[in-house]
Length: 194
Image (cartoon, rainbow, N blue to C red; front, side, top):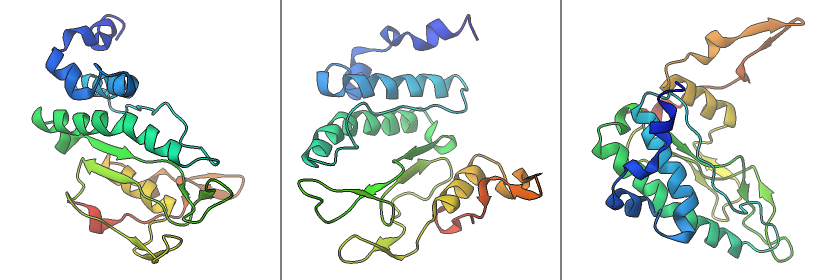
């Protein structure tokens, strides 16, 4: 690994077209673009788990207009990652999970909005997930899930299934209680599987 890492992390080996695709040539998208391009390079080399973090203030309560700026830093790079993975034949075997641990309330909290765990969006692409599918819906206010609610334990069970692990077989007993990555809950969301 030590001998291969320098080459894998050397983004100068990529063409200017690829740099432009990921937005590395633009200040707003450069940071996340580099992370997404690096993610693709690591996936092509067989790395099984890669994280690309968006720099910025998603956790802005006072001014949700900040989210517009942060979203602009990641739209092009993540689209490039999906496009690039697909063009290289890697998307079908690579699961891309994009999201955070909560959403935002649909109503104002002073000048901003609060954390909202009752209805928020995550998306998955590639790796055994149906394409072009929207699963679940909130009420007309965007406050509560009213259709096909996916609990975080269900999401975890589904991701584990997609990467080839049975979350129920990961159960272990400690101090008289069963534990697993999905707690002792979680059901695979079969409707989103390809």
